[in-house]
Length: 96
Image (cartoon, rainbow, N blue to C red; front, side, top):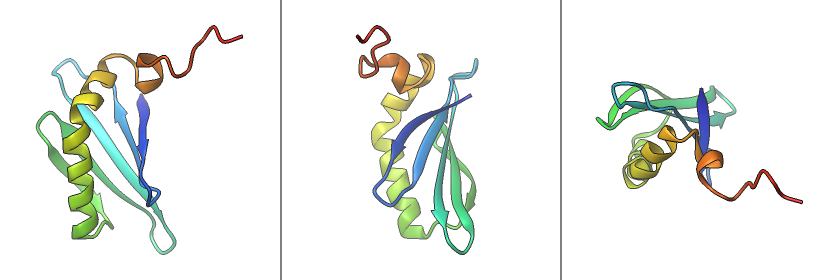
């Protein structure tokens, strides 16, 4: 399952998987593009192994790397707990 994590100001969506038994988490990014439909990239945490990169410029990819590196601790935490919505009180289930 993939959990929503963050939408950047350029419409890049970042989602992540649950934590696997080996401690890895798949982080997937995609951005809509008129010509190519989507640009996308995958990063595996905690090793920061980047794969399957298509369409992002070097500058865009550097920005994505900065975002992932600066939020990896949150992604790893949320991946153990069923995503952001399940770890925060932002979406209370007993709201009246």
